[in-house]
Amino acid sequence: VKSYDVTLGEEEYLEIIRDKTACLFSAACQIGGVLGGVSPERVDALAGLGMRLGMAFQLVDDTLDYTPAGEGFGKDPGTDLREGKVTLPLIYTLQKCTAEERERIASIIGGDEEIQPGGFQATQEIITKWGGVDYTMEQARRYVEEAKGLLALLPPAPERDALLAVADYIVERKA
Image 1 (cartoon, rainbow, N blue to C red):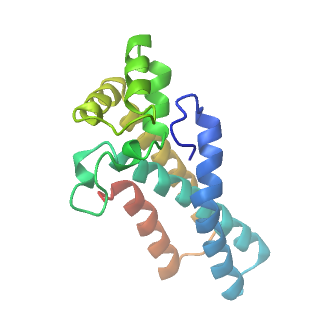
Image 2: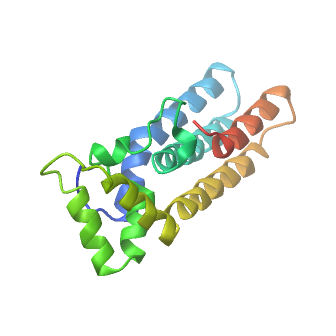
């Protein structure tokens, strides 16, 4: 993710997380299919499944930076913001918020100095006000539903049930 770039758009961001996270999930699922000896069509379905699960996983991870749920579970709220990572909750908010709020956020994550106490809280409040976390979770759920649709191409089996459980877990996890 481009650091400190408040002009980053949603499409560019989704491309970044696809290349950073989702491709890894896709490759893992695809390799599992190849090693399991499934048909090429099913290998493709598994690759698509992994891509969608990877997108959903990263989107949920990005929301944890702005929610108390991340505390105590290896994700310290505000870490991404302090590192200047502009993620979807913030991108969406920057598209919806007022010019004054946009300037405030830009000054908080400008990269010139460490985020001052209260800067994260102010940003978090603006993101909450404009629904940045909710929007990001909606997108994550959409990717999970698409992944589940691809699982329908696989025959009923314990492995498919396990993948369905993983898909549901991704959007329900708190860390």
